[in-house]
Length: 632
Image (cartoon, rainbow, N blue to C red; front, side, top):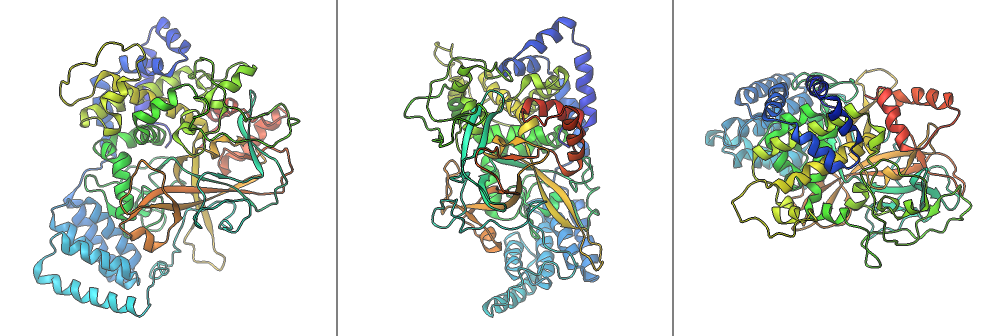
């Protein structure tokens, strides 16, 4: 699921075994991620790209008219059986597999609108009737859609809008992104938050918290005043996330199509928006592939501008390469070369854009130093894992808190020494292969234009090469290097996004199951260190940016969304927001901690911690720990 499929892992293992002893020693000694990527890129050939593309045929993403027609027929069968929720899912699959100019697309939209009408989803029904007409619905059948539109408008004018009745016709409850330990929504009146215009805070820290640094713990959060159990202390927005295909709880990656009958009707990738992760019954498909789908035009537009326009042609290869590889590449694509170059520069002085926390915590706290000064860092190797425990370590950019910006993500430690050489080689070759495949798929991303990428070479005093047409210049390999950095970071900084799903057992007692639906990277949540006895719980929700003409490079106001907001054309997805809540009373001076492992691994983590008599909060230890503990 997280790592590439087994076939690709074996392929890279063979490449590793064919390296000479000197080559292995050379690779194992590399502490600079640029050099690590260059090593993998130099040993990646077209044969590797072809092999990855060959095994990715098990994860098809192309449009398929025959599949669309089959899904529509299955939807018709469910409709006749009055299982309208199942019918909607089948029709949605047909919509996703139908090509843009085909009659199947309009027929699937029209049929889905009929099922939505029976579910009393009148707004979604109206949207689908409009889409069916727009995509060439047969003229001799248009009167059916017009009659349905009139009935929907009549219900809406009378205030009858069954948006909360998704469970009708199937017995399943509508699902949202939530915490496994606490599903209570954050209190918007909490005195610990400074909200803007009543909106949900973005990467907001409670005044009762401080960001501290120590060589042993790195950046971490410490309570500066007493915090009561149940209090929301941090709000953080995911910088990026990737939906996990399949049901999320099965412990493996299923082939496309094998998940359609599991867990009720379909798998996670069919139930949820691929941008904001919100559940949707009437997804809007990507126009280029059959896999990606969204809850609204805003989410589709946001995903396309940020990353999907480059992911779309290589979607099958990305699925084969695993969630971590896809998320790493997605973060790099979204950041763009300007943000990357800014992150690679030394910290500037008083005009620094970094949002450094002015600490109020006593220096008595176990050697942790408040981050209070803007210090120009000394030159060091940022690719190394953990430097020696010396005072100059505080000068490292990774010792600073940069708020919810890309800087916070870039300066998470990759912990190179915490990954075995063979795993580093797997990551390097995987990212190098995806980079080569991306080069073949089309022109480079606009956010990675040649002029900006070439500035990354400090030694390039010579003038730029002549404009030789569109293409991938050699210096654009920086994209691959940055993606590799993020892939190594994600091994200990990625966050599983889970929800509680009704198992569908029709008994007197409702039964729920925790399902992991996505992997995300949160700039502030990543600062929290691990504990097998955490003092916090997590609650996830979806949010959207509101902008009349969205500037995707700007930070707009976050607002919580309902069905109306999701369908508004001015809504652009901001993804997932996590609320971190104190699970017990926290005293001043205590660290804010949460458990990195999922529920099924906590016992193993606890046993290992007990065996060494102390629960280490060093992330490099967690990296090696997760290498030996199976985390689904």
